[in-house]
Image (cartoon, rainbow, N blue to C red; front, side, top):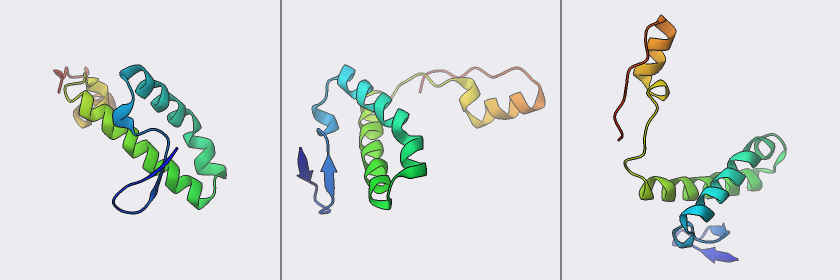
Length: 94
């Protein structure tokens, strides 16, 4: 299914806003799994399309989950603590 957004670029796939939560997660898992090969072996157009689709899917996930749990080790403070050998800080949900 091809649709056009207001910028005139082509979007492939279903609009992320129309996917249910399970479908969205499946799409995200698939696009993350194919990222490395697209970067290494895809054409510039394929990489551009992959970037756009990834941004659409991730943006929809973040829109639906604004208070998702953030692992302390995935923050700057947590990374600094790991590098210094100290305990990882705790981070409440965003």
